[in-house]
Length: 181
Image 1 (cartoon, rainbow, N blue to C red):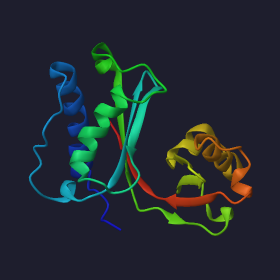
Image 2 (cartoon, rainbow, N blue to C red):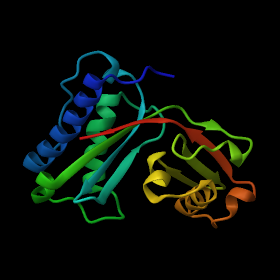
Image 3 (tube, one colour):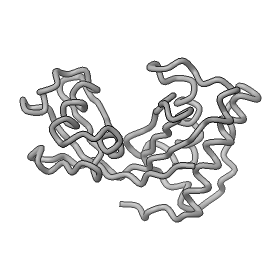
Image 4 (spheres, rainbow, N blue to C red):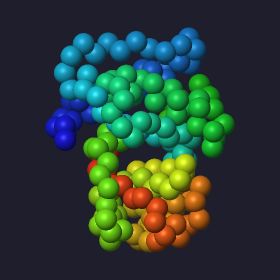
């Protein structure tokens, strides 16, 4: 597992995400990363979550380390604002009310028993057949869910019946370093 991000690293990530969105709204294009080296150049999975006035407006990311963290944040900030099909695209005039949250993910590990899932510590990935759903570790805490409710919602996110976690769906857990503006 990679080292946790420092306070300075976390501030740099949040700044990158906001700059990516500002650049996107000003030019319609993607911002090139100003990061030359360091921990932000390590490949890491991450999600960018956008809220306006406390309401979710977009959340997209890579669960696995596909790209360097800086590139993932730049790309996922814009994707969360413009490509999350659950929401209308973010508008430039919402930027002053926008709050950015970033979740930097550890690698997923399979669990043998659903009892191993710890609410508030683990994010989950539920998969069966061609279906796959991911919930970040902060989601059940924000909604006051217990483990069973969390697993049921993981199944629903995957497009599966809510009790599929009891019927052979594969469950993986991961940890995340979560921080926001």
